[in-house]
Image 1 (cartoon, rainbow, N blue to C red):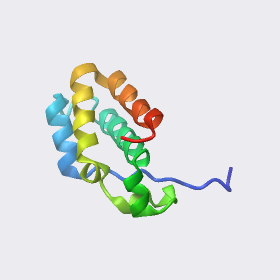
Image 2 (cartoon, rainbow, N blue to C red):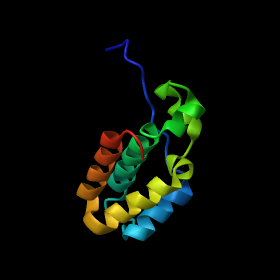
Image 3 (tube, one colour):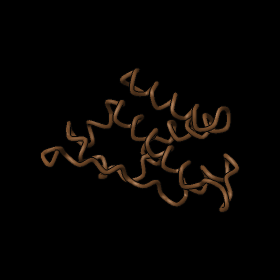
Length: 106
């Protein structure tokens, strides 16, 4: 396992974290951390499924952190993620991420 490349998903910026939580109605006493993590995973799936990403980082997914906040990089996917949370919660966000991966393009 030590030969496996390490991929670090970049954190969402504070603005997008706040927008996400405000728009889905999660307060400071709610499960905000799990929602941010789920959004970051979905945004990672959206970014890595999109060919424009590889124009920026080459074919090396380990460079994904160079893109910074993936919600800033893919605002369309961020909007779809918020909408998925609003319509169906965590399960809908999981389905959205799987759709990005299965489609090979978002």
